[in-house]
Length: 447
Image (cartoon, rainbow, N blue to C red; front, top):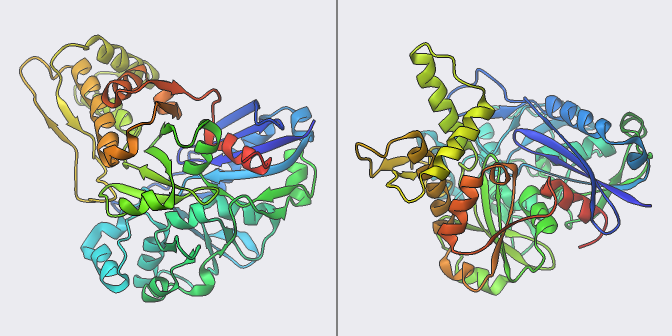
């Protein structure tokens, strides 16, 4: 039986899945990357590509040998917006990945300067903004001749590509892609002084772009020469694995960040092109997706746990394990149903449409600032923030929310909040590791 390998290079973990010819998940594995670069200036967010690749090696190697031997194609996806640079024909000689969480472009009015010179509003953490910052700060060494997302870098590494390729889903995430022409906005890139030769070649989503090299095939227990498709953005990959009806379903995934998505046609997208907090991204079959993507998703609950641990440390108290803290906050938040709770706006990391926004806690009285009240207020704040970022008319008439992402799947409190705030049934996708499954489904040609 032919099988297909899907790989997902996420922000905090990587995943590998194998699906069959019907797209049914047969096996999956994941591993934390532990790739964050420590000791950087405030606002900088970088990761070590080599550590991400090593974690992926661990993932793939843990899959059964029998399944791996039947793999006939590989699809990849990963965290969008970020950028990594490397030398010609030498993907192992590279700069760190500057991730989507990076905030260096927010300082000193830099983004406003970019908007003045290009006429487009770039966001911090977007690849084009990061490259422009490197150019402006004379940090773009000429030896770095290739640029791509972390998953574009991996495709080049696995296939031995001399020049990187990128599909429209990832190109759009960099902020300087022209949806109408399907190519880079070269005029804007020239205004940013980003060398044209640095930009990846745009290829159609799902196109076969190379073959797995002998060395990597041997290390992974795969057949050498099997095809790899161009990497697809993790947002779009998740939709391929979760949505049954593109016109009737709403997709919600919550991991470190969060993404609320609906598939629309180009005419409808044009009506809401100026919506604050909403962006439109390429999808398949000429369709687009309207996306609300707050910067703080599951990371908000990580903040809650860390906040409690800091208070314990201040009083010399040994806190419980993280897993117990999460479980307790969720249980107490569920128990707080029907009680007065604080109102919490979880824009702790700012928002792409308003980098200076910050979280707000209000409606506190003498009784409701309890662990359960705060946990419940945070969950409902996350849900409201997501809903308010998309025009309500894009959500009307759609019957259900298809949910994915471990931060949502493991958090019954957050799932309850989403259902109540949206007033629609919440159904979890049948498979786990949805983004990796979507990449595998694309490689199988099932969409």
